[in-house]
Image (spheres, rainbow, N blue to C red):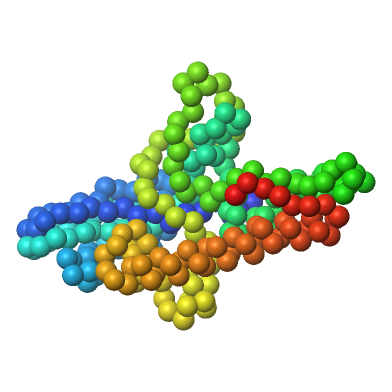
Length: 239
């Protein structure tokens, strides 16, 4: 609550496809949109044609000539509606970004440190381990809760009614980290994260997911494991 910058962050794609000549249209983005990162029209060869519009989430309409075309807008948002954070039987509440080192450190302050104060004397004795139960990027959409539970789950954070766009894990620093890791810019290749448009797409997705894995290990797994080792207790979990 005190650190909204620690909330789970995702990169989403809005797309319209068609065979020209035709008009392709993207509806305005919901209020929860944070930042538009890339807008383009892609022809059937995979070549991108920049679109100088839609950077504020407004409606986009583009006329295309003969051939197969795809109008794409890539943007960031906080994934919540339809994810496990708002589709469970305990409480609807927003979730931290497990790629964010500071967010996970704050999580440790509010959980593990409190356990240490209360029952730390039992670590390594009666308390053998902490258990992480499915830490999540909060990007997959899951099935609704059982009908019999509707209206019974406490709601800490209201769930907005919004379209469910394909979403992947993100970090504000991700473009810079990607450039450092792979010596190339990710921004022109963002559409490749969501569709297999060219032979290069597979390479981009492989590099993206490798970096996501490295960030998750560093921010979440290693940080929590280091804390546990320093306090004489094991770390376990279901990932």
